[in-house]
Length: 195
Image (cartoon, rainbow, N blue to C red; front, side, top):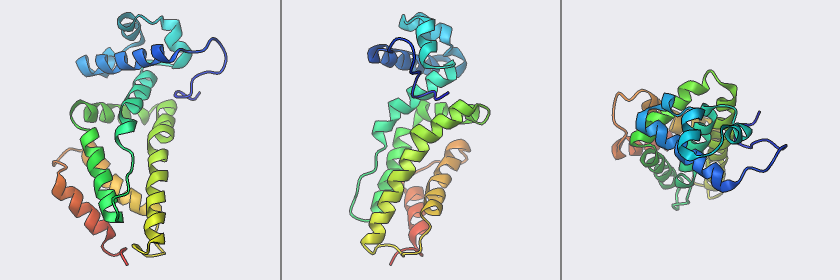
């Protein structure tokens, strides 16, 4: 089941109710942790019927995942800053800013849960990772067409290095992610790739 697309059969799920359920799920998770954002508690606080929630999402973790991705996706779009290094420096900084505080903790929890839940894992890929990778590859292709980077660059590997390093620090926060780290990461990644 696709936890973010909803079901085709049955009555349509009103967008305002969907938004309310998402907002409530995040509120509960931020207040007292992911375990508190149960379908029962979401229904009670939002006023939406449990049956209405279950028509859209299979479980509370799915509601939370959808809520988290909907909440953050508008804040992390790529923008062309004139050079490949400036574009990726900004993309990484934007992601770090968007994933600060409570959001970062929630991301850690959801990523952990996704390792044991195919629906959550699929949602991460479909709603979060895949669209951003496609955007990143488009910018790398643009950089190649502008002759900024070598023609033999492995785009997937570049994205794995840049964002893999960032997610490693998100998940194992042994050191802060600051501007110096982002600059160093971008510079070291592109050092041998620039024309």
